[in-house]
Length: 155
Length: 92
Image (cartoon, rainbow over all chains, first blue to last red; front, side, top):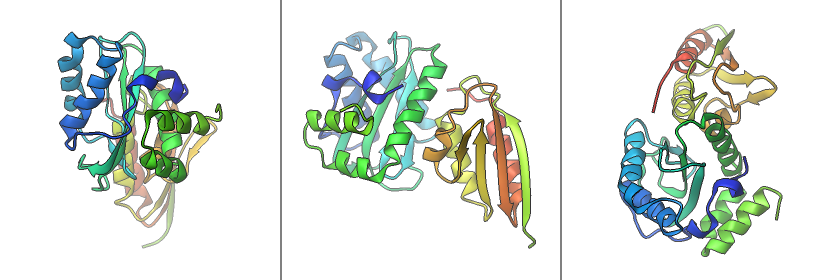
């Protein structure tokens, strides 16, 4: 499953305002609410679920990348967004380094296979240092989107 | 310590498949051993088991077979710990 198939282009965040784990997660969920992909009434529940998952172990998997994710009944297909922090966020990552690139995923409860394929695809692209470096330099949502398409070879 | 090569195949028992949390636990465990550890599932290989990015490339779903290959002075213990992580059923 390609990143461009589940990432909501209009919800990309090229310059995160928030600097804490909860703040970043909330800012990303709010972006998906603004685009109409999440109901306003579901925001709190989704943020809570994402934070609960973080309590089990940080989704900051090193190299400046974190993939906060959860399953939730509030979505009927896998959706996500990408955000960039230019100053870096302490996300208690496994390498203790700040996180600059966030990919947030929300899956329907029963779509395990889809979720795994999304994780596989996201990590395949994000292990590419050049892709990450360009993402971190992006200053507009359009630039992030172009980089994703380019990485997927569909630009 | 003598070099050992230990190979064991486990079946992913978690209905979520080999998910991010297990990949992170695996990578962290692998980092505690001197042995080189490789994971193989079908035609896919994670040559560096210390990287969750690599482990997630296996795309190992529920019921998939994953072979753990460790080479080094502590291969037996490494395989033991990683097999335990990958065989576990978790939920989140």
